[in-house]
Image 1 (tube, rainbow, N blue to C red):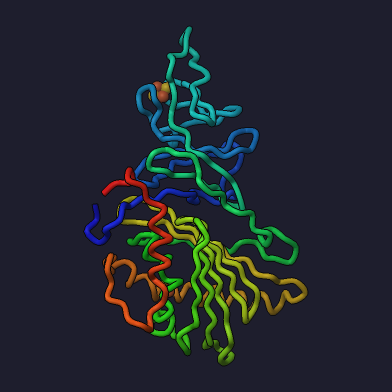
Image 2 (image 1 turned 180 degrees about the horizontal axis):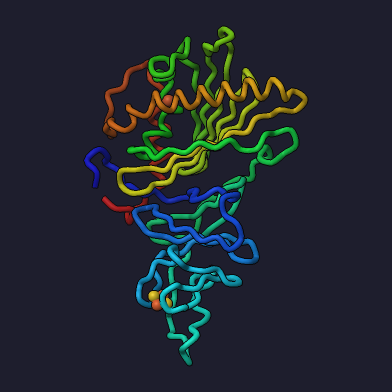
Length: 316
Ligand code: FES
Ligand SMILES: [Fe+2]
């Protein structure tokens, strides 16, 4: 285990493994998440599936040369065919399919333009669902503008940013320390911040409402300059690295000129903020018992909330 963390690397919950528009019918892609090799494919009916990567026969990686056929994927090595549930449905040269010829299939959903899988240390079924976001694809809202980073940090450090009200001033140049309210609702954590922002056009009043739905999926509603929704997702790659992505959509209804200008500025500012946070995230250590003071944010609520996504089987 990485010495920087006293928590296991892989929490339980839903995680993005791809953007839906990047995966056409018949596409096959190798993935590496949760320290494991996986294969992603979209079958001919349009459904996305994720299986463990290695064919149960003699171990070929289905992501390298596997071919979609109907509702399954055929292995490049000896042509065994596996369906989306990981069951072997055909061996062209055998009279009988061996009992128990199965590959682990990961629970997969496609929502809000994201292909997501459920990870659980014991393989338990999902304990919560990802909501459908009404803004995504709605009239007047711009198509997703996507940014992606590989960061040497874990989701719990990055998500903790939202409750860390003081860092907005010292790291990101917020004019004042924002007023932040944090509340937990089962697997959901809501964090509302109000602050004064320094923009090229002068100071503005801004609002950031961050909502976490489990460890891998977070929405950020930005108000004040223009209505923006950010869908932030982070998926553990291995014990050290996380695949982080922000997807932005902006309400351009009746105001396309302004939306384009302000939208570009917001996106540029968010990228700047990310680069400001990154060296801190990549080099910090996670303290179980940080020495907090009365001006700090509500870390207690955050840390109680995030601990529910680990089970005894999650590891040391
Ligand atoms: S290794 Fe996949 S069919 Fe033989
Ligand atoms: Fe930050």
